[in-house]
Amino acid sequence: MTIVWFHDDLRLCDHPALTQAAADGPVLPVFIWSPEEHGAWPPGAARRWWLHHSLRRLDEALRGKGLRLILRRGPAAETLRALLDETGATAVYWTARYEPALRRRDERLAKSLKREGITVARFGGRLLHDPDAVRTNAGDPYRVFTPFWKKMKATVEVSAPLPVPDLTPDHTPATWPETLPVDALGLLPEIDWAGGLREAWTPGEDGARARLEAFLDDTLAAYPEGRDRPDRPGTSRLSPHLAHGEISPRQVWHAVRNRIAETGEQDAGEAFLRELGWREFGYHLLHHFPHTTDRPLQEKFDAFPWRDDDDALHRWQRGRTGFPIVDAGMRQLWHTGWMHNRVRMIVASFLTKDLLIPWQEGARWFWDTLVDADLANNTLGWQWSAGSGADAQPFFRIFNPVAQGRRHDPDGAYVRRWVPELKDVQDRALHAPWEAGAAVLAKAGVRLGETYPAPMVNHAEARQRALDAYERVK
Picture (cartoon, rainbow, N blue to C red):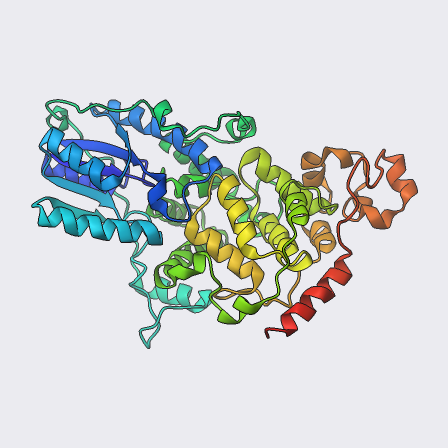
């Protein structure tokens, strides 16, 4: 019998470890909750909410095949050894993990189990390719996305996804070990702040497939233009399903490729596949530069004069900055556990450049509040925004939040949805209420500093302050 140790691969389709285990004989699906083994980055609150529901869906899917998901909590090594003793299993298979703390743990555990005579195998499934497989001609890891992407497309063949394995009564263990109920894992917050998450999302493999189909049918054709408009449903919203492994990147890749072949929507399809490539690039960097989860890739930023300002950080976290597009994004995040990617860039630029607050503070907040929190891509995105990482936006390129709002939310629909204090402000004034004049705002029932916060900084002055700070490390 083989233990299949689930983690961020909560699906049955295109699951190489599960497929191989089924080919070998009886299967014991197991999930172990051990957040202390994630090092400095245990799953945040929004991820835990999603995980709770995704585990329920996975157990239901397994039961439909005559299996069940065994839930345990505690140190992984001790828990797996206990299960091996209880069940007589002789092998443990799992999907490779790339987060630094988990990778180190898994390497130690694999060596230890092999010494004890247990068959151990780790399989791909989280990515389109092995992050060691794409390197420069000199054999070095890439630090710039475009040449990485070109090399990946030229050298990596993305194999077809595997079907759900044919699980029969022969795969069912003779006896089942004890399992915890999912509620005993304590994943849900004590205070139910997740009402908006329930409204916005359907965790689980079925939800992931439905989301992919909706994207292909309703959104892909307009993706190149729509992906930068937070006021429209122009993105795939597959990221939380990918983060929890409810769908594999190979499934998404080939579904988009097939749609391109059917419809001829080459430009739209390639634009989206490039975003899957960006996800791969994040893991490439995490694999080769694991220190970047906490420290800048560009060492000169170790000496950057960041500011320590708890009040400013709190106002940013709660969407009370006085800049409508920033506040809309931060409130969307708090309510739904997700934020449009264009707005992520805007709010990250505001934190790191207008406020000069360290990017690590933003990364921590996103980690706790995003349902799609992914260590590789969270790190990549924040270091990109701060100018301190690979292929980073130059620090001196500073987003103007007013201009960004006008460009990407021109009718104001996004802001009005998430900042109800501004629901009656006319479009032109909406993205610069402090410039519109007290009379215009008062007519809409908005009083700066009362109904809606006054801008916490003057952007022009903040921009200059950021450029002056950069001169000290340039």
